[in-house]
Amino acid sequence: MRILFAADENPYSADALLQVARLGENTWADITLLGVSSRSRTMDGKADALIKAYHQKLLGYFDSNTSPYFQVKPGAGGKGGIHKQIITRVRKGNPAKEILEEAKNQESDLIAVACSNKEDYAWEGAGNVPLKVARDAACSVLVIKEDKKINKVLCCLDHDNISQESLEMISQMVTLFKADLEIVVLKDSDDVQERIEKKLSWLINYYSARSIFPCIELVKLSHLETFISQQARWGLMAMWMGKKSILERVFPSNKVSRLLKANESSVLLLR
Amino acid sequence: MQEVLISLQADLASGIAIRYACQLEKSARFNMNAIHIPDMDEKGHSPGSGWVHQTWENAVIQQARKKIAQLVKEDLFYCYLTRNPKIVPGEKEQVLLDEMRQKNYDFFIEGLLHSFEPDRFFQRLDSRLYRGLACPVLMVQNLTDLEKGIQIVGTRETVFSVLPWYFKLLKSLPEKPDILLCHFEAPGGKASFIENDTTLISGIEDRFLKHGKKPGRIRTVKGSPNELGLLVRDHALIASVLPQSRSSMASMLSMSPCPILLCPESKID
Image (tube, rainbow over all chains, first blue to last red; front, side, top):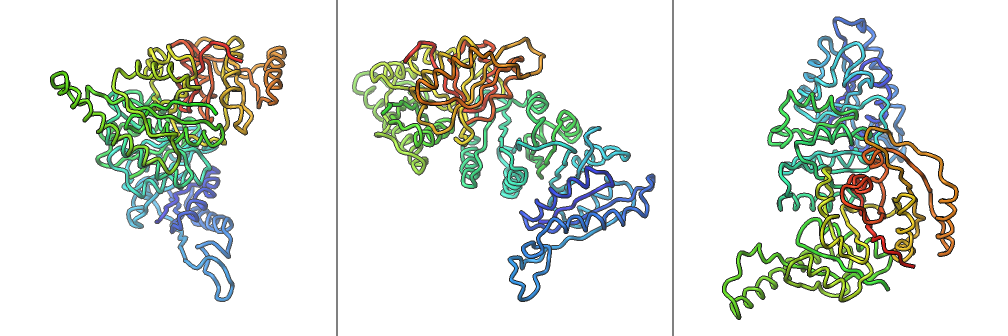
């Protein structure tokens, strides 16, 4: 697994670093720290220093004896031993474009990006970079909202296309945030079809085996936005956005923005 | 030992209900009796009458027995049943009411997947079964972690109708139950905690003392059913009086995805 953490110079990015560290350590992921120096901004020259500082801060979260991000010295008796990378990158240009380009080059599995609580999924002074990344990325995206305590992971998984990777990602989020898991079943009629029930039953077994008791909630598609605005305020909203996803059919890319804007919480878009 | 009836269909809701019941049984101790009522309509119209009809009905029952045996087998790791599930053809609600009357069960369990839209919950409250039962119904909507504890929910008028059922059925659970006293207001108002009524609180504490128990946290809250609904979401079990459909209490409970014990108003000691 490879995580790309795109950061700006604001405190929400610095705060999100801890979560990226824990996620990286839990999943033994390679981590790329990316800073983007926008031509229109005054960050030129500072981006290098910023990313270096983040790198040092990130390393500070790990135990050098057990973390996969440190080489175990021969005879040191550490528990690590599998070496994972943390690399730093600085790019120049349009932030959203550069982040997407870097994710593509690195073949990232997850882009993590923090954002301000003041505006809709925005980087202060740079516009809605996180929103654009969430909307246009080819891989999964975790948008961590500033100052939002995550007590619940609300998971809108597609009924037919649930991949092992996305289930594992959800497990990681539940563990990472010590949160409850709620599986939202989107339906377009009153009945829950037998094949959906089978899938849900399988999900309950999957998560129960990991001591996670998912709470299942049926929501009509027509009420999804209301549901999100009411229920997602103290959660992390996880949505599967695969090509065959029911969400993708009902909410094409221009509506993803609308859906995200209706939501006050952090968001994980699974692809 | 309490006798409990659980209604099983070959579906997810029943799978969740049986697992939850088995989890609960480890602390609450009861004998679990299962019943399955096959959906005869699902198999088309009965062919003919007399022995032809009888043979068809037997075949449907055999098939239902297999399906339910499979469901129980899948979840057997988690629990046990007192005996094999009873398979009784007929109109579902009538069969259940008859069975409950004949055997005098202490409470009834069924699974119902939780829906964000309250209509399914209201329909269930309005059902002949719920209105006709003399004992509580445990509506299991999700599997929950029992360590999340019980919350008894009521108004100053109804809370004393729930307590006797709690002492009868769930007293042996290790956690102290929290109590939430609700003052319902018109939609729009945010939920806020208000000062407890000391007379009411001492009345509740006295009831617990009589049974050698202590209540957990007692809170009084005011707000609209929608806002108060946020306070009934994170528990292992919610206990309440069976409310009138579409009442404020029903609207609030409809927002809870937790298992809900709905108790009839009739007083027991």
